[in-house]
Length: 273
Image (cartoon, rainbow, N blue to C red; front, side, top):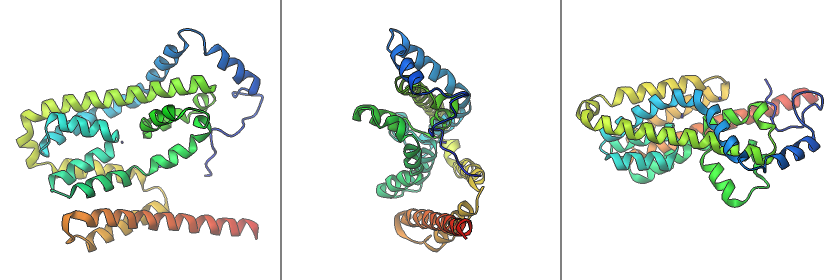
């Protein structure tokens, strides 16, 4: 959960310091073809994910318990978690299922919440441009907030292509496996207390999303998106099948993106004048 001027970690670095030049990268890529190098990179990636996995695991437990509390079976809860691979989308899906929202609303809202992954993917495109379609699909599916954070650390983004992709696979594989395991455990435990959780399901979900929302309100465009979405949600509250939630989300995103674009244009005009 699954935000100055940003500088891409993939821009050419100074030749003196931490980054390697083209010849160094080529040499490292050759060395990375040695037997055992792939497993070593996988293990290194998994190890790098441990701090974030430790914080995500408890949320996976909660997500599993809330899944069965919202009426899903252990298998359905686990399948949904495996398909979405997104804590934020998973929690919201459980909430929408609980209030009997239309399946189309559940799917579209979950996809909308995952739009930021497109931006993450664009930031990493230089690393995956030469990879096969299968590799890009696998790495794309494993792209979540935590994986992006690890892979944009300068020391990791400077890896040679072969090492980078196996390291990435280690990070995403560990996060994915840990989340599914936590979901299964949470769903298994939650089934025994589903009745109690169902009665108080609203509060933990609202609390979780409130905490997520507060952490993202760090810019004017984010606050605008939140405010517009909230107003739109109130205005569409009576719409059937909770489709107003999807509409208000899209309206809020459009408002935030529009303001962000306007700020960028004004900044450009100011710098040129």
